[in-house]
Amino acid sequence: MKEQKKGRRLPSEHSTFQDRLTGRLVHQMMSADAINHATYFLQSSFTPGDESMIFISNRSGAFQLYEISPFPFGDIRQLTDGAAIHAFSPAIRPDGATIFFVRGPGLWELDRHTLEERLIVEFAGAQIGEPSLGANGEWLVMAIKQGPTSGLAVGKADGTGWNIIPFPRTVIHPQFHPTDAEWIEFSGDPAPRMHRVRRDGSGLECLHLHDNEQFIVHETFLGKTGDLAYTVWPKALCAMNWQTRQHRTIAEFNAWHITPNKAGSKILCDTNHPDQGIFLVDVDTGQQELICLSDSSNQGSQWKQSRYALAADFAAAQSAAKSEGTLSWMEVATDTVYGPQWTHPHPSFSSDESKVVFTSDVSGFPQVYVVELT
Image (cartoon, rainbow, N blue to C red; front, side, top):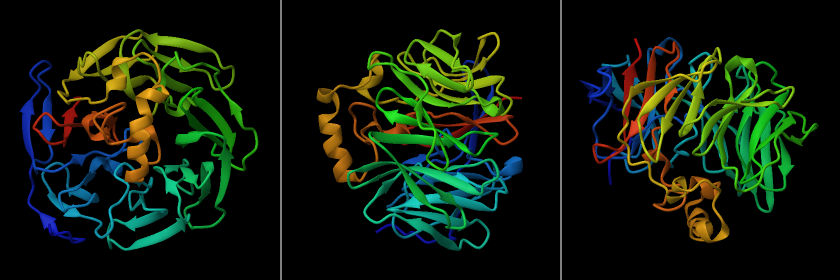
């Protein structure tokens, strides 16, 4: 049994190299023979001021949360232990002092300094997804599947006001509007994808009707503009006006996972089939700048398609999801359909947007890398 103890410190595994195409400085943040990955691309891996970087690893035998502080040369500190956490659930509160994460059917809060944990809310027998925070960190929303009920769980970080907003299909990736915490955007699984609902459960509507042949994925808010960015895989990077529902194509290329900057003027993305690297895209002009290569294995047979998976594609994955306690068949950690998420780069910005963090298994194990933009 591997040692796992909250608070233990491990020596730095940091090294650097230059990207072979762009020449940019790349930090390899760890080297352990384990699954190590950054937070999900909809969340930041950095605390405010970029003083510390958090990551998830199963190096202790179960997925736990770790911190490198100060970035990039500091020791590795283990932040959680015990039962495994949801490997893509950590979300840092805007003040940087608290990290929210999911363990089993419960949403937890971790004090980064004392490492004290507090159970915020628990939904017996449920599967819950990664939490998304409102702009001030007071409200949280998560996808939930509890028995026959799917939907969104919404409530306050202090544990009060929690309720479930039901939805007739699986829900994934709910997100609060960046300037109006009354609104939540979420994905229906699979098509049609984009929906919105008010925090109190009113105003539920589909934002864009489309069928299985329009493979829309990875929609998120276009920074503080409040509009939405999304990809039509593998054809185009697009945007939709939150008010008018007008769609426009930003760039025609195989943008995959996307992360807009705070201003909504640039979008970071990885690519696949073919993997051309990680790019920064200008929202106004569509101009694409290569940041670096990822060289990750980017697993998942469905990414070779231009449509959502059909019943025959994911029947086996549904069975695996049930056995693994996974929320969605699109998140299943198998070599089929959508692939293990830690084989995907999932690039995101640092807090000051001067760096990009991503995951790659080019070394044989997933590791976290940070590339300098300036």
